Amino acid sequence: MTDITTMKLNHMSFPSSDVSATATFFEQHLGCTVAGRGGSWFLKRPGFDIVIDNAADHPVAWPHNFHIGFELGTLDDVRALHDRMATAGVVMKTGVFKHERGSRFFCEVPGGVLVEINTRSDADEAYRGTFDL
Image (cartoon, rainbow, N blue to C red; front, side, top):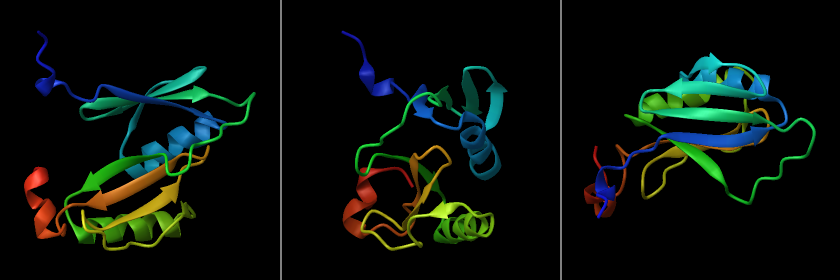
């Protein structure tokens, strides 16, 4: 039997109607490195890749609440990134708000995908044993 407990995230792949703008967002705001350009763009993050597929020839419709989540170490980090993105003109869907699993905000990447930036450093006590801090 295969041990799936050691499995890790390899990559995310999603379409964008503006691959260049989507890749630039991930590069400028989320620390990705562009590793390849073509019909699809390949972005690198420590531990996983992001593949952005060109969907310029057809509309991309995201299901309600579909999103990609990234975690930062502290609430101050979350607030600072929110402020930096808002100043840069990123489409902000929410402000920073407290949630039982940790504070967060949502923004929209060019091309339409929703991104959550959160921290678990201020999660309610009931959730502290469910993840690494």
